[in-house]
Image 1: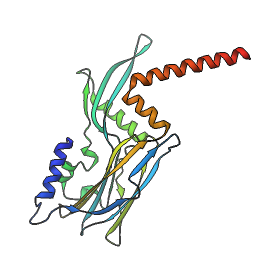
Image 2 (image 1 turned 90 degrees about the horizontal axis):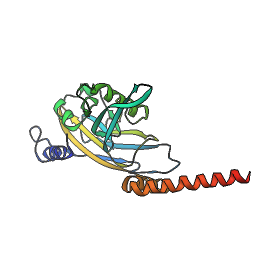
Image 3 (image 1 turned 180 degrees about the horizontal axis):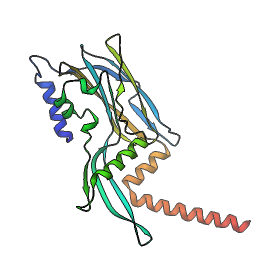
Image 4 (image 1 turned 180 degrees about the vertical axis):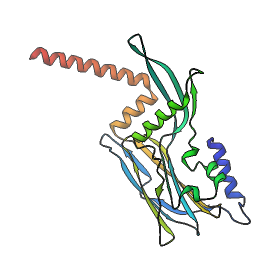
Length: 248
């Protein structure tokens, strides 16, 4: 679902009753930190999400990262030379995905709402475009998902979200070393009798800082300048190595 469609859907939830006079209301939730700085020593960061439900029911927390396009290639042996012969480009892939719930997702009777809000791993439909009609997209999709799993960016286990004293909840989420910069969202939903009772969305800003920020921004915003700097550094290192070896 596009961001615009999702925004309109959320506006509909806030503006119109879902059942009788019930409306989704803002929830009392917050994060221990709303900003993550990535530098050369970054090995991951843990953030605490906590809050209270607005009334009886189930709580679901979804933390998802910014979307990006990914190209997955497959090499084949062509006369002793390995060449990229097939590829699939996946669009709008979330770069991070976690779910926590106070009850099994299958037991929360709100299938249409969960599908519309992108709650559940079955809603992660990766749309791929292959370079050949004979290319089997599923195997490329599985390879991409394995990559995210190995880097701890996807976790297909629904984390348990206990309700303390029947009202309060909290969950810790680890952002791994491979976390990329961008705006992440922590989405908290409250369901009761199949209706969406409460909703809250909190942004989490992930940024590179220091020398890491300069290198990252230059590589993405000015690739020509980045390539020139890399060439100059390589030449300088080669000259320095040659000079040292001549002295030895």
